[in-house]
Amino acid sequence: MPSQPILFLLLLFAIGLIAKNSSLIVAIAVLLVLKVGGLDAKFFSLLQSKGINWGVTVITIAVLAPIASGEIGFKDLSGAFKTPFAWIALISGMLVAMLAKGGVKLLADDPQITTALVLGTILSVSIFKGVAVGPLIGAGIAYVAMRIFSFFS
Image (cartoon, rainbow, N blue to C red; front, side, top):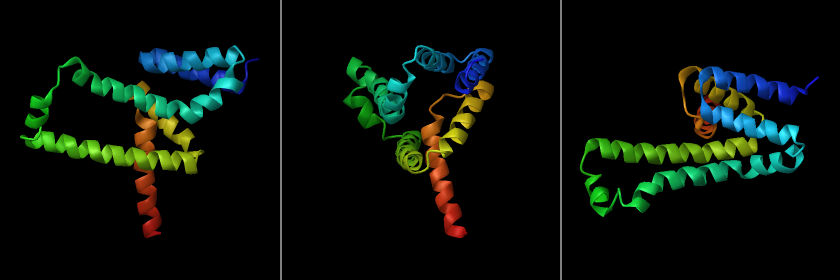
């Protein structure tokens, strides 16, 4: 009989297949291979401690690639501040980064909240075709909501 973590991962893998979400499928497949291959003790703690930073680095590389390729230059940068939508995007980017900062703190201080955040992300990815960047931003939103809740209680 497979262990509970393997059964849980297989269930999530099935959800990923049904939702046709390749990111979720690949992530779970990697974890299953590590688990079944007996490499989980060595790599899971490394992934848990460094994975978010690696992911942020990969996302940052993807965001900066148009600059490196020359698709975005100084002319685009100066022009970006001429429209209201550009200012909205600028402020939104700043707010999301601040939320993510709170999310990192929450996940470090209260790791059991990760279960609910991951479940929420998986549900959003599988049901609503969301993108699995949710745990960090979700943790940031939860952090702010918890601070507001604590303030009023």
